[in-house]
Length: 316
Image (tube, rainbow, N blue to C red; front, side):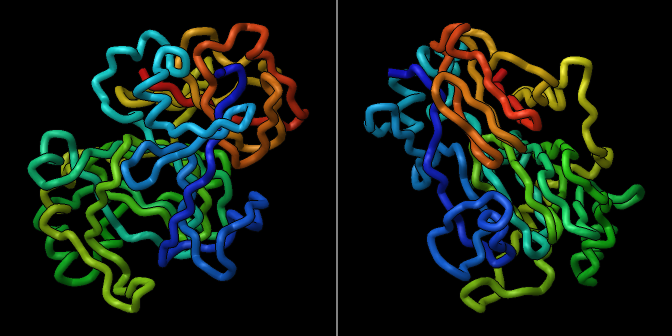
């Protein structure tokens, strides 16, 4: 039943800051012409946004059913006792035609009290336009009072560190860190399975309904970690590991890699460029897949194009 890679139908999300580069860069057929699609949810086990996989033979199955009914075969024995009722990660592609709001996600110790879910995430830059920026972490010396004054003055962006990304850069954003993706970026995002975002500043713009977008100033002030150090881009270790936190482990593919993982482990992959063929399924740039734990060593052998590049995502 699970003798090949599992791929899912993208779930496209309209956003006021979105664009059309999922179409032009990744050759996607977007649902509607001229609509600003800011996000493509590639692997999602949210109640209202459910990823669907079509198995070889035509049977369709949801990610939630894979997690609840076929966990050992797909995700491995080590995750059988994982406490999450839903697949614990959410994977997206983001296309920022405009700057996103300056925002924060609540930390675990406050999320339930604030009515949300914590979200730690990572960004992998796959396209960076000229002059593109990432806003992440407070500038040195910015404390709570200075930040509150910046909200009153409309100068929040002056309080946030600015990074200049290039394609291939990776950034780790823990819950509690203020951040925003800047215009001109296409990013792969791997995060906890959460859709809680508190906007503290949104560049004074209106939404797609021509109404001012809601801000969450008090929730943001409670969620921001004012003691956190400003982040920098991640550097891979000798094994290619970019991030290894309690929620996910991200590893860059190695040159001439001939196999995807080992039998019995949980593994998802996100294609950056080139083509990859495994167990009769071919993936290309912009595609995500889950590698069933049940696949044997022979089924995991890779047939790659010369320029192939991907990242591997695991639940610890």
